[in-house]
Figure 1 (cartoon, rainbow, N blue to C red):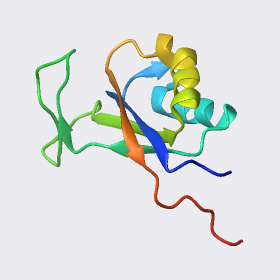
Figure 2: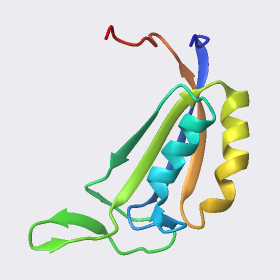
Figure 3: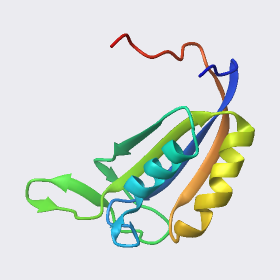
Figure 4: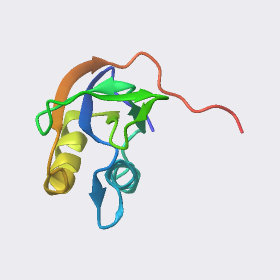
Amino acid sequence: MVLPEEGYLLRIFIGEADKYHGKPLYEWLVLQAREQGLAGATVLRGLMGYGANSRQIQTFKFTRLSEDLPVVVEIVDTREKLDDYLATVEGSITAGMVTLEKATIRIYRGGKK
């Protein structure tokens, strides 16, 4: 797959405990991205954060383990493909935030197997 130098970065901010049909929402979002042929997706787990649903800080500490840490799903591809993807998954995101920004793609290549 070849990506143009001018791409877009989609970020989906959700909670680790968010579900879609019984499975983690972040997992379902990544599987949908792969199914739609997007260039790639990464899930990042936050150590600390809060959001619109709860102003309470969620944090990872040994004395108090949160079961709903922040999670960010990042996907880079063309604007058109990300718009199509978002139209498919938007209804599954019941709480969170989605951002879209321009990204300059410098390198996109697979390693030799």
